Amino acid sequence: MRFVEELCPPALLYLIFLVVQLGLDLGLGLWVTFAVKLVVGLFFVYLLNTFCGIGLSPVSWFIVAAPFVITALATAMSMQLNLDEVILIQNVPSRETFTSGAGTAVSIDTLPQNTSDPSLQAKTDSPYKRFTNSS
Image (cartoon, rainbow, N blue to C red; front, top):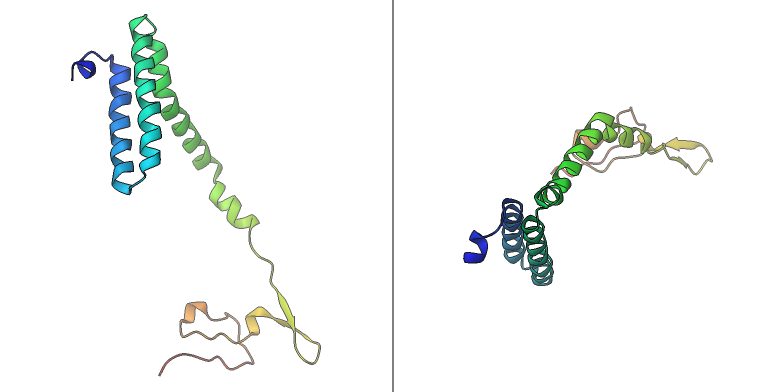
């Protein structure tokens, strides 16, 4: 525990995040991920503590804080751009049409719906009988 007590604040904060991540990986049974994170994480804790030891504490804080700042900025930008609405508008499928035996085009809305859920049934009046699974 002496090693933990001698850590500078950025290295200690990174170690706390690392322990939480390792606990989650163990809980999910991700053994290889756990091992890789343990090795890389301990290296970064040592590196951050070394930076603090030679007077580069601001660099250590930057390394720890940069991912959080970048994630917050990316989230704010994506919320401002309304990407979910843009994606929904551009991915609206075109209406398919089918040909009946007589060669006339039939819209998908006029085809029979085999469902008892009214919200899933076609919104227009259909000349076809709708089959339901009700008994």
